Amino acid sequence: SQTIHQWPATLVQPVGSPLSLECTVEGTSNPNLYWYRQAAGRGLQLLFYSVGIGQISSEVPQNLSASRPQDRQFILSSKKLLLSDSGFYLCAWIQGGGSYEQYFGPGTRLTVT
Amino acid sequence: AQSVTQPDIHITVSEGASLELRCNYSYGATPYLFWYVQSPGQGLQLLLKYFSGDTLVQGIKGFEAEFKRSQSSFNLRKPSVHWSDAAEYFCAVAPRGGGGNKLTFGTGTQLKVEL
Image (cartoon, rainbow over all chains, first blue to last red; front, side, top):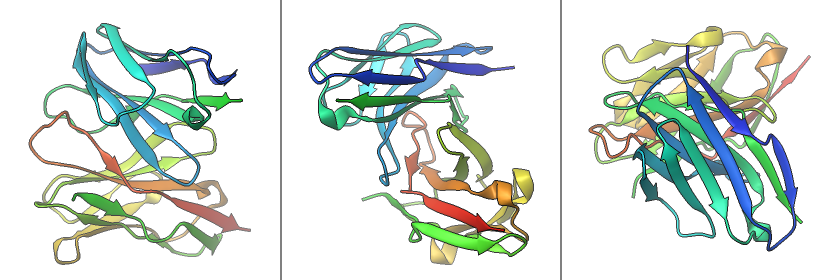
């Protein structure tokens, strides 16, 4: 069966520090991968998605970047965090092709101080 | 512009009472429709989906949803709510025909269950 992992589960970082959040999927190949951010009372905002290794689409201009160095690995990064980067970050995957059902990881709670 | 609206930010129901959570969408053509549930501090779990066919779809945990094309709605229902249903519920849509299979989410409805 397929499993999606995210780490760390929680993170407290000072303003101006770098960020690296990792997401990995097991039990599937060539998935579509997605990064969302959830701010309090604002639903889920799609940040990036990837349909393959090295292929990244950005949905919203911001202080973050994403990379997909391996088929089942998706990384969210920042060189210098802002206070507004605080939130709950969720990774999701679907099997490529005609599937639309996204499956979510447990999330990372990021607090920028 | 494409959008998903969940007009109720918070809903409180008594355990055993019926539940209906509203979802309306604005799209050029009927999209694929989903309901997800999120427990505090957790990821999202898919409750049910509508792609085509029967407009009343059954999901997990005793939930169902009805697609009404004329009203551009996809409301979630449960006949009898359990205390464990307290969570946040998200309606989501995806355009038919690819485009990265991206979902657009509503802002969510927080459900509180009174014992």
